[in-house]
Image (cartoon, rainbow over all chains, first blue to last red; front, side):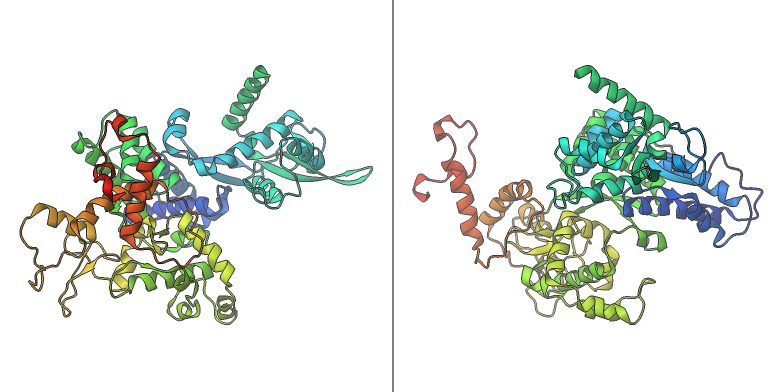
Amino acid sequence: MAGATQDFSQFDISKEEIDKLVAEVVRYVLFKTHQNSGCPIKREELVQLVTKNYSQRALPAHVINAAKEKLSNAFGYELRELLRCRPSSATQGRSTQQTGVAEAKSYVLISQLPAEVYKKYVEDENSAHLSGFTFVVISIVHLAGGKIPEDILWRHLKRMGLCETDASHPVFGNAKQALETLVQQRYLQKDKVNGPEGNTLFYELAERALDGPVSEKMKEYISEAFKLM
Amino acid sequence: MPSLNWKHHALVQALMTRGPLKEKDFHAIFSGLTGKSPGAHQGLFNEYLLNINKELSSCQFELRACRDQYVGQVCYGVVNNVADEQSKLGTKYTVQQIAFFKGILEAIAQDVIAQGSISNIEALNIRLENQVLSTQGSQLLNGPLPAAFRNFTMSQKEKTLDEFVQDQWLCCTPDGKIGLGVRSCLDLRGWFRNLDVPFCEVCNEAVVKGELCQNEGCAVRIHHYCLKNKFSRRSGEILCPRCGLKWQNQLPKAEILDEEEEANDAIQSQPAQRPKRKRTKTNETHEKDAVGCGSSQSSVPNSDFRRITRSSSRPASQR
């Protein structure tokens, strides 16, 4: 059961113990994702679940891979690995969109179902507004070149009816908090830049928004939206 | 181990993302995915669930069904079976909110006449300190916590109650009280056992809302809907399975029929908001008549109705 493609014979551990470790990792990922509303989980946390009781060096990697398989086979979720990017001002020289310097790996759960199936049966209509908000904000930042000053971003949002100072918006509640959640979920990251007028806060796309499938889809949708105009 | 395809995954993900689903919704998803209805293809449906559970069990999860004790409806959900360190993460509620919930649960479950619900005021008066002594969790420390429990204000309690109802751990009963929600029925079997709640003689699930045997010394409890099944099938008397005393049918037959009809309306019109706090004495039979009259008054004259509903089949003099 534990990772048909993983070879655990090199470790001197019984199959039951391996299965138990894999189950623990799977459960940790599922519960933590629910608790922090989809914020990425650091690889370090998963590794700790294994090294807590076992000291074999290559074991964590094997267990995590087996857990990946389990999540895919049993639930249809992909345990997608993201490389955490650093804000572009922290790196010297080129400042293109893909400047992320890999610091730490983190994971998010993504459904592997075809999009129409997901939309028809799985999507929770109570949280549809959050997906919409995420999409709109990422599009704005993308169209601005991947990076946008804070006040410009809020200017755009205000035109669509959401003010920075809104603390009890009927749909989003605290507007500032809603944006902050996108940062925690690693769709955006914050960057302070020293300018002639002092410090400016920039928002730029982070690893979750730059991830292949997400980025591709986004560009598709944006071009669709332009066609409609 | 049989491998699951995207259809199985869709069923599991639907329950995990949207929470517990009513039977008809779940069946609708199944029909949409496979093109076959569970009613006509029981074998296939069961096979799907069995295969799903084989995979889920290795991670201590289970896809199961239970009956909502207030309207007798079947609901499906994915349930966690083991309370370990990982599952303690799986909640967004604070320690105080959890203690509050436990207090409500105990108050409902320990009701001697098994009404299955407590009033709003009772819920808000639950004292959290009583829970501190009985809780043992790795998160609990000594010292400052009791103060935090004491300072859990009324408005925080109200807000928390709303959240519990929204998340389906608690529910609002049609008569404006607080009862157990679908998630509690699905997830908390072990808890009911610990609280020594009697289990139903017919279906072997905990009876939080149900009927008691008339015999004072007999602890038998049976759910309303389980009794309904028994009464409708047999024409003779029902005897208590343990003490043999004749079981009185505590709900008049006419009300049972109306209850079924109204239950469907109640489910649709039961949004997460709790009714405003008003102490009105609602007489259940009057409420049902009012519902019946209201719907036929606002509708087209009877001659245009093809379908004869129960309310419109009553003689005109009653309205």
